[in-house]
Length: 233
Ligand SMILES: Nc1ncnc2c1ncn2[C@@H]1O[C@H](COP(=O)(O)OP(=O)(O)OP(=O)(O)O)[C@@H](O)[C@H]1O
Ligand SMILES: [Mg+2]
Image 1 (cartoon, rainbow, N blue to C red):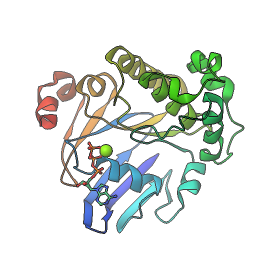
Image 2: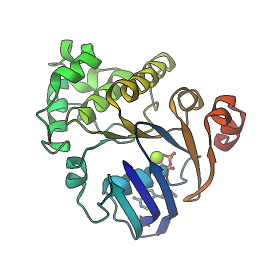
Image 3: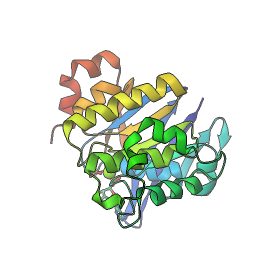
Image 4: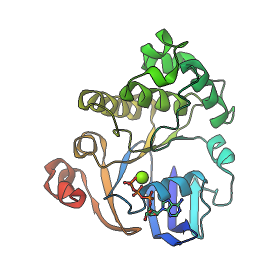
């Protein structure tokens, strides 16, 4: 079991957003979290990585209870996090952005520059360029590379398709599928983009008002209609 979230509650001064979320990632593969704006998807990601404290429930990484661990210690336990909006430093170079990932990974491994340059050769060619001059899709790839450079085995992705043109969204989807196949990665992805969800996830939890109200399996997702219904505004 790579990730086990049990009965998780968390939120803000205004009250609890997550009303008892339970989910698991048993091994390599991609699990989706889908739902309309404001249902608590980012709150869930932030609680799993430790940027928000859990008010109730537990989070386990490979069996270890990390509910009270700092964000840094969770990263060190092998979790890569790509926040919504990417969290780039636009006025820093591509290389310096990648270097910040070394710390995110907690220095568990030497930073794997060759690995991420192999995945995204343009990052090598543009290493000296300011990150803010990259296209939305390239910035997303940089953010993913930064999360991978410390050698995580669990990747948390919050709406990677946001602000990315459709052909590049497809490319990112194929990349994630490849990462699961070739590196045995476990991925938890928050998405509202039906095409990307259909392309990559093995199953998807539907979030509404801080609760999982449905879990769609492979066929239901590929069918698309049910998924679109759950995401319709
Ligand atoms: N810092 C904050 N303080 C108070 N309330 C917040 C804060 N951040 C988010 N919220 C509220 O918590 C709820 C869940 O927000 P969250 O960002 O988790 O939703 P989301 O599903 O990620 O939405 P989106 O699809 O727009 O990214 C919303 O009602 C939101 O207004
Ligand atoms: Mg969000």
